[in-house]
Image (cartoon, rainbow over all chains, first blue to last red):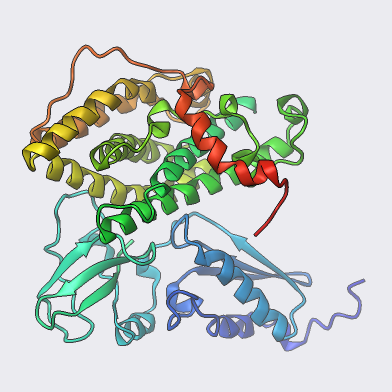
Length: 172
Length: 261
């Protein structure tokens, strides 16, 4: 049944798949690709089946289903037939996996990129001394409004310098 | 196998029921930012519940007890487990199902629950069951935020105005009786701990009470003494409130079976 599959076709070059994944965008933060987000953990080719291993950002992130569907769509458009999206939970996703390029794009989009993880992922209380730079005027004179924002991955800040409110892609 | 299924369902039910309770605030929060915060916490909890239910469904479908468990459900999915089980099949602790009350009661319920979940998931990360360990590792990061947020609110309200302080005291009065249940292992939890796939919940009490005492102290609140405790949720014996939650939550699937978005 698999006789007519040409395994030498460039479809079977996993580099090509990685490249295509760079064009699949996060539906809620449309400047970031799934590669920028760091949620694609592996690409495997098992006989004629193409497996994309992804990990969720947050357990309840509603974008994950759309992301899986979009990955499938892009691959189907480029001639891939048997595609399987596999979700793994461990090791748990961290914003440390976000690409530097992705962080720059976030900032240009008006969202402050995540700081390094060690700075804030703890249970200490009333901790707003963390230096989050305003994506608009670059001031560090900013204030946490709420740890929870418009999506699971963001917190709400306000800049005390330019007075603009902004989203912060919180470290995780 | 039966114990692993029950243990997984207990974890799932806790997250789903409190997640659903929190979601009742969506659109009704005291201010916009906190409405968003409690809705985000609801989303995290329901996401965690989905992971546990998906695993429980796999276990049920692969086991022979499926038929005796509930002959009408076949095969099990995360949705059948959430939407088609009856109140006495649910294994969540009584604390999770208590009504929202005012903001003080919701905050206190979240704090008492998250403080427990925080230490529980820390231990569950070491489970020899890879799926449970992975879900715990993932969820712990989210729960860390829940614990910090609810701790801050307990302090803000407890050490706030006369009004907010008295409301916190009332909330403690209404909820403290449901706390002991979290640390009293039921039969499947005993097996879970002895077979190393679950956590001995009795050992969590020490860390939990230390955390609660520290936050209460800062909030100028005291831990009540000599309270008669109520238990039974983990064995399916619930307060009347769970029935009310399920009536609303399961309405669509019960009335229009198999309907989808």
